[in-house]
Length: 209
Image (cartoon, rainbow, N blue to C red; front, side):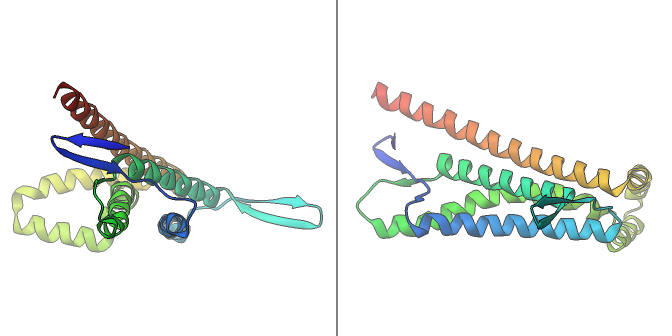
């Protein structure tokens, strides 16, 4: 698919599943998403989350399954789907005969799409627990001592957040996962909506010319 902008044409990039170059980025992204999820899962278990597990029997074979881990894997699939959608709908390259340039831009566009999906997800997933950490609280106390006007704001914030800290870790886990996935979906959706609107505008202008 080509899109014209003035006198310049752009081609849309696609994930090429028929070759290894199409599969490898997806595998790498899935591994990164799984690593983030497993890191968060391990952290929450270490903080006291009760990991309810059950076993599925397939004849003589018994497969242990964790509800929380299954939830994490499902979120990794959501992230992979978002990444594929963002890449295939936002990755454009200038049309031309130079395939070497397109081969260089192909992984760069993939990295950009990965950053768009993973950044809001990771921030929303981990920020509440970073804010509650002792070193961050010490930094806030130090800053409020340096800037007295921040002291009351910090006190009000942590009075509110410490109330939430008493929430059960299993509930925190689910809320954090859903919030992070929702945020990443919204950011990706807004980007796709913006790109689609820009693309339609460019097509309309090119037709008028």
